[in-house]
Length: 91
Image 1 (cartoon, rainbow, N blue to C red):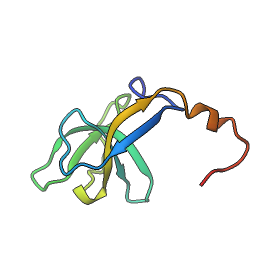
Image 2: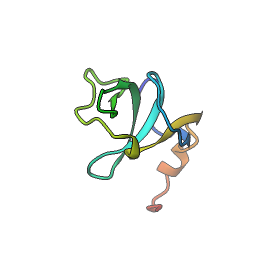
Image 3: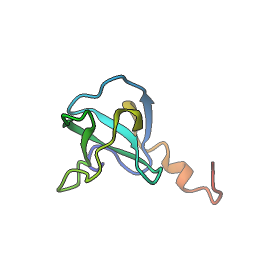
């Protein structure tokens, strides 16, 4: 999500019933990976159109409401970078 978010930023997330265009939101991909991208809109079927700020194209996958993890409420810049320096794997 560069240039809005950076590697090492901590993001506090809140669950919402509805996500609006412009929201930075997290969703679970089909592979189970958590993706953080911006909401562009909603399809007629009710899924969300998402796109990373640095990406040229919108995501090919459109998450359903139940796959949405939450909306970025607070961003604490670079605090998570210290975790990247740790030689251990955290759960």
